[in-house]
Amino acid sequence: MADISISDSIKPADIVSENNKAERQPGSGSFGSALKDAIADINNLQNDADKAIAKVQMENAGSIHEAMIALEKAGISFQVMMQVRNKILDDYENAGIGFI
Image 1 (cartoon, one colour):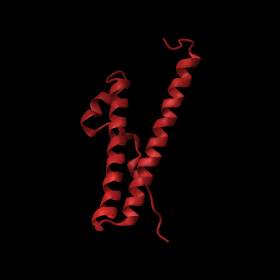
Image 2 (cartoon, rainbow, N blue to C red):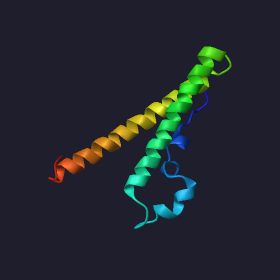
Image 3 (cartoon, one colour):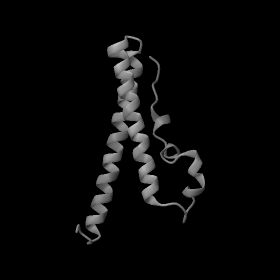
């Protein structure tokens, strides 16, 4: 059985686009822009999965294997994003700042 790797879609380099390499240097760029880029990438993975599933369902032209891989990539990236979100909220609450 062939090994299937999805790690190439979940690399830190993919979170921030190639055009923003200068902004990733320490002291430059912002956390907010990196977060927005990561969310946009995750949204693109979700859209790609939806398109792959629709291709299999409606057009019978797509591969069920490709659709499942796209769906898993989107699901895993979403789970990672939720864990990062939870960690940020925990750190924020533990800092004693609290919500307004």
